[in-house]
Length: 182
Image 1 (cartoon, rainbow, N blue to C red):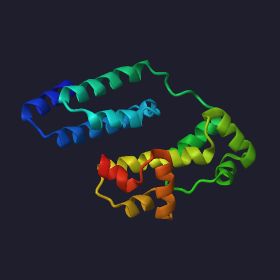
Image 2: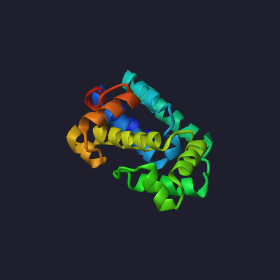
Image 3: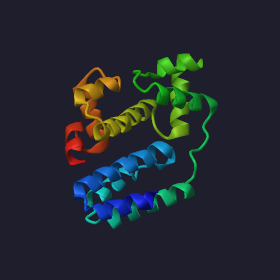
Image 4: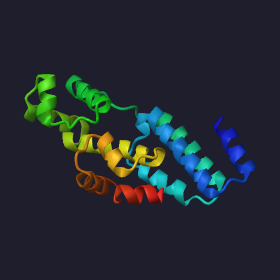
């Protein structure tokens, strides 16, 4: 099906912008279906798609990425409390999570939970929550007509400027720049 789609794109003589758009949608779908694909190289992959000049290049990029997903280490298992917190955060990412809130829900001291979370994931609790929200924002920026204020609200941020600051810190671009660029 994947090869057929690119064959149709080649036969249809679609403009490069359309091919890139379809490729970004495919890559977003890969990330949704294979969470282990969400590695730091995602930004690099998006940049490679953006710079590709031929359909065959994009097809090869996506085919190679799909092939490597199966070879990558499946997401490690964490301590039960951290697993539970990851499920809660992922399910309810709009909530303005704090260590105290999560510690209370897991019946753990917030300081202990924060240390455990950092030890297990390599990130602070707040870093993880912000990175998850920014990844959701990237999907919304590329795949929805919502404006940045609406996306900010949908993600649970009360302040668009604060969200834009976090987004820029993690991506090097503001949400507006990211949408215009991709």
